Length: 395
Image (cartoon, rainbow, N blue to C red; front, side):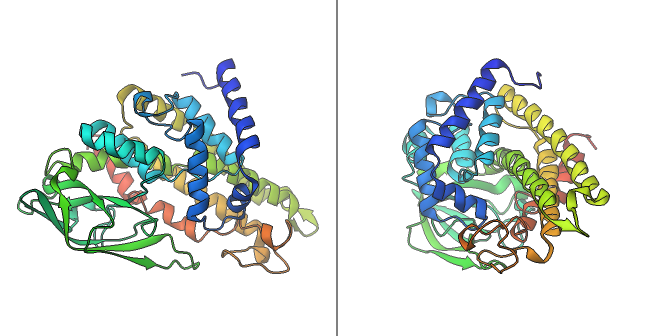
């Protein structure tokens, strides 16, 4: 694998950079730069701009409306979007459900849902985690009972990101409680407007609302909304999680965060000298930068493997572990650099932390509380180490 960009890839990089400079609205990039919670209107606007350009579904095959990009082109696109402070593409429809429907969905499901994911008509959320069934998804208890031409669903999902905006939810449900846990799970598509569904917000410690509880009480779901075979949903769940964990690595966002930390270290002073000249702080920056460079190469290797095999392998657990640890370390370094001038919460502006401009451009590099979750969601890092041990070391 060539680790330097070819002439064609450098030309693609310039094309992406120029398009972002011309197209990305300043009010969107400013919102991302401030680090606050993005509104649905902002996410919809960015979704529409990417769709109009044909750059939304970067992992989809061309025949389904995807870009057909190589792994390196996808890496370049992510890198340039992060550099320009573009929002992350909402992953549930495009990066998670889309690949599942390509591989396991019926022709009818593909024809109905894939175009609506692309044009933004249907917003999706993920119904995996439950109370007592987060990283251990096989212990989920939400039940779906087949009654004629529909299923009746009862149970609860939690930590449902952006569920308050979603039109549909893809869910793991238990359809056979008598067999081994992993063998009695199915994958259902559920319209959120169906009677019996209730969404309750979960307020975060920093005051934001991006996650929810979702309750199902005698919810009737048409049987044709079953993806794949009944009781074979565990295979689909693992397939989807490999895509999710690759995205959680967030190489581009870590590269952006590294540049922010370096800029802060050059600006902030300790004992009259720039913080970047402090040997201990400089050593921490150097260490995390080395780890990030190694992860970039590993990420490219995984993308090439996914292109050849059709899906990422269990090695994505490496990306999930290292990606989240590196990102958290960078946010911690930003917090340490800003010290008492940090703005830990959205809207928390004081005289001291307005070092980068007026209140509408507050610097939230140290708003790290929300980022503590990254080592937990998508399967905790402890679970990922178990996966690596069992699947790659064959123990």
